[in-house]
Image (cartoon, rainbow, N blue to C red):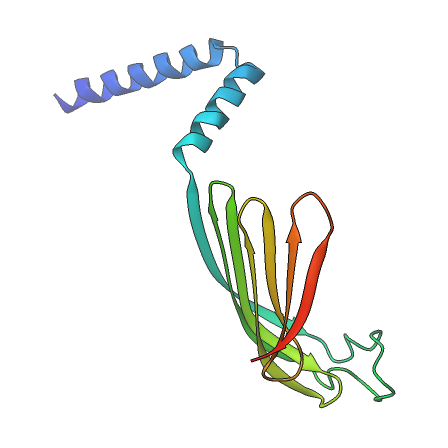
Length: 152
């Protein structure tokens, strides 16, 4: 019985692969399948952790306010926790990592968040000094934006 069932499975596989090979796939078929996939999946969220390595002196080309380098002074490795989410025409991303201060020659925790509601973008960036952040708001197609530094 097992031998007959195995033969039937092999025959079905050969028949289906032959039938598929004879079909002509058109660009309209691809577009239709892509549209169906988009309609089915309206939202998703991914998260990942990245290991970031910055070599000593990697920031030496940045103006350093007459603060002699190297910047950073030694090879540094840190973790960056990242996420991206999308829901129809809305999107958001965030990252928690570290930022190097050339003034104090130290690494500090930093976070950044970006939100887009389909029309408007809001971005929150950290400044080097604790308790301060920079917020920018902009519209989609035009490069107009409002920026403000705030103290929290």
